Amino acid sequence: MALVLLMTPGLAFFYGGLVKAKSVVSMMMMSFGALALVSVLWVGYGYGMTVESSPTQFSGDPFRHLGLAGLSDQDYLASGFAATFAIITTALISGAVADRAKFGSWMVFAGLWVTFVYFPVASWVWGGGWIQNLGAAMGLPDVIDFAGGTVVEINSGAAALALSLVLGKRFGFAKGIMQPHNVPLVLLGAGILWFGWFGFNAGAEFLTGMENVGLILINTLSASAMAVFGWLGVERFREGKATSVGAASGAIAGLVAITPSCANLTPGFSLLLGLLAGAISCLAIELKFRLGYDDSLDVVGIHLVAGLVGMFYLGLFANETGFVYSGEFGQIIVQAIAAVAVLVYSFAGAWLIGMLVEKTMGFRVRSEDEVAGIDLVVHGEAGYNLDAQVR
Image (cartoon, rainbow, N blue to C red; front, side):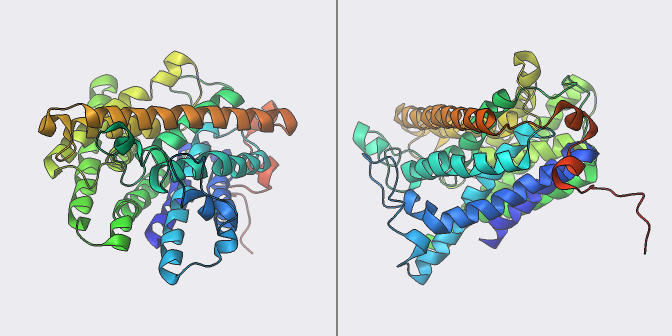
């Protein structure tokens, strides 16, 4: 639980280093705000919405476990672990609207999105809902999503795409103009995320048993490490240089891709997955320039794209049920249905909620504040007060 919780401050460092210097406080505060807000909502009613669902229900009952009443100590442990997934998923979306979002509007969006999108989706996949029962209903293998390829990665990536469309492009949006202001901060954040991801993927196995912990850990390491080379290979071929930010981004892409499949691949196929995820995500981040949406910190190119790669890859290479083992398409079919359903639902939900916030209270800061940097305007603080006197 603590490992996964640490990932959200790690994400704040990762995102914070990628934005301009006068927006770093705003960027990091969106992660810390999500951590606080989602924790409160989870204890209040979120846990009840994610458990004890059925294929015919939209979600679990928000009133069943108000305030986490009536849980055993083991239930508290499982609930706390699951809460950290809701926190990081919500925080991930903020990278799409870096440098231009109001903090208060972000918090309203985050509360509504986690309530009406994340909690129901988690109940569909892990709480007894329709995705968890999809294979049985169709006479096919069960959907495989061990640690959140749909719930976390596709969910946050689709929402990020929707929100980037709601807020529109940053001023000066063009390839090569928006550069990270603090590369060491990016690498620190990526390192913390990489560290915490071992708890992210293996934590559920620790809660329920130790049978596959070794496989999960080595697959997580294999995919993330190989994804670095996949990303850097494309970057070196395309740009002529292999960058440290590219290495960090590649590692994250590999971690995203292995998230749904960490318990259901051999280590060799995990290496191949990492290579593909790193290379494909590196190529995918260029889509925003071709298609004209401003996903500031490449949440779509990394989390949505690598999440889709990881889910579809299972259809081919999942132990026993994947096409290369079974010669059948059943696993591909259920993986595709689950991935596309979550993508569409999350995109639509985020777009509607984002538009509601935009039309009622405004989501984007004033243009002059965006150009100058929004830290002082939104939070009254500077990330780097270099002129301050030591007293």
